[in-house]
Length: 385
Figure 1 (cartoon, rainbow, N blue to C red):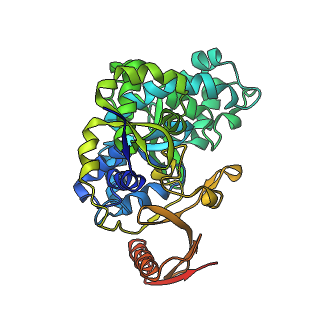
Figure 2 (cartoon, one colour):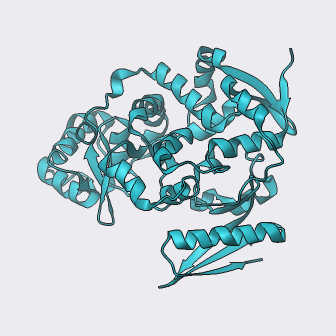
Figure 3 (tube, rainbow, N blue to C red):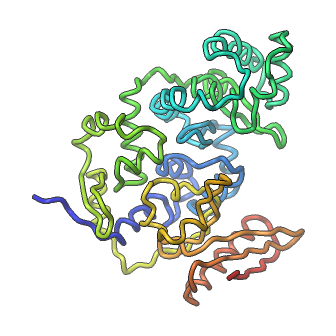
């Protein structure tokens, strides 16, 4: 039997279904949504809330705050590609063990400023004092830096560079399994000891090989069909590291081809039934995706969701930005931005090409829903050429 070839439209629709962008999930399935999409991208503070607004019925910001900071069913920390994500707390051992060595060996040496102590000194001297400083309560970066200075009694240390807003030593201690993000301290990020914030989580219950196997399965559940290069781009791990992992889970996988796309792709065998049941006659709803939405970051080859000629309007690596996008029938057709006044939310859409009248009407209605979600009385909607 030969390799099955799937039409690109069906693959695209499968992504929407898996990401709850075809049909929204119920409110009580919020944590399931986060699990299904392999975490909410959280570099920008508003992204997790807007990502869930587009995926969960009757979503309100307080729902995420409750499960993240009160119930602690979710946790915010650095994961894929050295970026902040919100993931299920129970899955933290998988993400941490699968990604830890990658970060510490490949990225950590270039992650700190000149003048830092060696990694051995940081482990022996700095880490224990950070944990001591956090033993009473979570602290903001500025307070943690001041407390660390008191505990070390050594003004030669480059304290300010330790606590960079880009992560600094707290990104390192997160990958080392020592710290996580806590509830914000006002407008500042706040940090806690992992063993006190999530005392029931044991990172050592799984080894690195097992963690990589489970992470690959999770990824394919949310982003398959995908190539190993797609997985590498998403995770930050080297392709060569995962050949053994693929063979370990081969019995759960199916290899397919996608019409019009070069190469072969892996997907979970259990997803073949979902793929076969897809009816393309049913139009996918319009979505307004926030900056850095997870579905835009799942593949190296993004032609299944955006045409190559338009990528430059969305992905802007030189300034570290990924634009908020408009999704029509599963394809990115433009970007959007907003301006706020006291009572009015202005939403401006910049289409790549002319959007059909009926689709533009649906985009405007989605913008109206957004304005209501954000608590504005009025909406001003416009398109920008």
